[in-house]
Image 1 (spheres, rainbow, N blue to C red):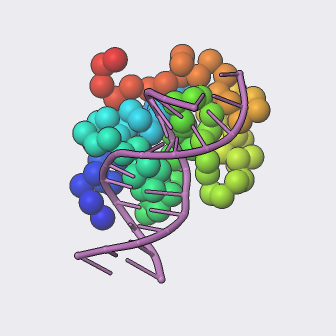
Image 2: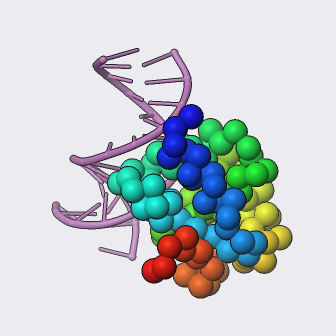
Length: 103
DNA sequence: ATCGCGGCTGAGT
DNA sequence: CACTCAGCCGCGA
C-alpha cells in the first residue's frame, strides 16, 4: 500500500453521487504522470464498496474498464447514480465530471 | 531487484 | 477519424 493509493481511495470516496472523475484527474492530484497506476489501484482496491471505481472513467468519456469486461454492472450502477450511459459512454460526460481541484 | 502487464492518455501515422 | 507507439507508476511473479 502506497501513499498514492490511499490518496486515490480518499479522493474517489469524496466523489458525490451522480458525479464522476477521470484517471488523469486523480493522477494529477497525486502529482504523478501515470494514470495507469490509478487504474491498477482501483482494480486492486481493498474497499470495493467504499471505493466507487465505477465513478471513475476515461477522459474520453467512456467507462474505461471494470472487473474484466463486465461493463453492464458498472453501467447499471452509474444509471442508479443518475448518470446515463450509452454505448459505454457517459451522457453529458463533461457536465458530470467532478474535479477535486478547481479547474 | 528485474520484467511484464494493466480498468490509460496523448501524439503521430 | 481510427489505429499505433511510447511513457509512466504500481503490483505480481
